[in-house]
Image (cartoon, rainbow, N blue to C red; front, side, top):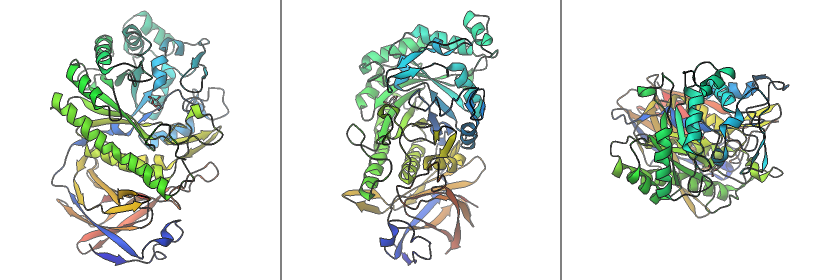
Amino acid sequence: MRHYAVSLAALGLLAFGWTAAASAATPVTQVTVDATRPGAPISRQIFGQFAEHLGTGIYGGIWVGKDSPIPNTRGIRNDVVAALKAIKVPNVRWPGGCFADEYHWEKGIGKGPRPVTLNSNWGGVIEPNTFGTDEYMDFLSQIGADAYVSANVGSSTPRETAEWLEYMTSEKETSLAQARRENGHPAPYAVHFLGIGNESWGCGGNMTPEHYTDEYRAFATYAKNYNPEQVGDKRMLKIASGANVDDYNWTEVFMKNKSGDVDGLSLHFYSGFENWPPYQPASGFDETEYAKVIKTALRMDELVTRHSAIMDKYDPEKKVALVVDEWGAWLKNEPGTNPGFLYQQNSQRDAVLAAVTINIFTRHADRVRMANIAQMINVLQAMILTDGDKMVLTPTYHVFKMYVPWQDATFIPVTYDAGTYSHGGVTLPRVDIAAAKAKDGKIYVSITNIDPTQPLEIDLSTLGLKAKSASGQTLTAPKIDSINTFDKPDTVTPKAISATAKNGGLVLKVTPESVTVVSLD
Ligand code: AHR
């Protein structure tokens, strides 16, 4: 492997916390992007979001009410809508999570005062039911996302789900469709995805996989979408509650005994901890904690590979998608916040974690056709943090924005020797690289320099296309635990980057612990 001597000062890297100790020789990674062998389509739905009635994820984060001084449209905050439109959110999973299996949709509709209930899962706080089905659908139409509704299996019946769907999707003169019209929505809503239960092995009913599979069959039988436009390719897809992390038996039992009426099986995996409860601080951590958290995130590849292998046995045509509808870092809640609200900061480490996880999904694009990061606003690994009228975009948000061209792109194989980075007994690949051909016809390459101590030189060659230059954005930070705050919102923001032609290829220098996405021209 060649090494080029590059002065850190020349690269402007001396300001980076840990780079001062880095070697003067920048490691070089040879990368070949092979456009002659395109792979599976990368569904835009892998960039889905999750919004649960939890902490300030909904109330405060999305919903401020029509009379709020915070600028809003029908109660939904305008700043958040604008930010989410910019990352082209494909779908939003709602209302939970654990909350979904205690949710009764009728309490969340109507113009009069709505019943006030308890949110027993998340802090035992009051649930005003002000944000219900119609507000959710309004929010989706404002940001341009598809609906992913989670039905209550654990504490309800197939009848409640059936009636909810009738309310949302029927165009006939039924009482429920009439109630929707009276609530201001004459046309049926589109329900693109229906989740049948959530974590049915735990907060969703503590079921065995055998019992859940039977429940699924009954719920799916009566879960009918009446929207006349939702037929053929547009039909509502039904997603079963799947495994917790490495519970391969759950996947085995469900796939073996499922009915034909299933389009997706979920998987939930949170990174950032090995044993419950999560203990890693979201900021103010050291290099060892950085390495440990990224190591846990990389486990996603093994989980997806092994669950997919089981699914392949029963579904070789890959009709059933693996839907990773809860993923992300679950860290210690911010000091002084309600532990039941799961409010955590979001650092450059989260950006690296998001990029390597998205790359894993793209490598399994044939089976992983949907995913939802947990959660969209103010909860766990969020895109956005709010406090009253203030809003800040997190490093994770910026990664999602940089990956917009990957939505509905085509996987392109990349070969490279990742090398290794070791610290504190943890060894990781030094770099993670993925590529895709976007709908605009361009090839995009994503380079995540996992190593927080050294910059990296990427020596890029291509097969099947002639690239003369490359340009895009790089997300770097002064330190691995750098965060964006309401006072300093631009500490971690993408900057322009370009590659130069060299020896018939392209050379690009990326900083430590950075995420870079470039398009080849
Ligand atoms: O995302 C927070 C919680 O994590 C969800 O409610 C639940 O499904 C999971 O355990």
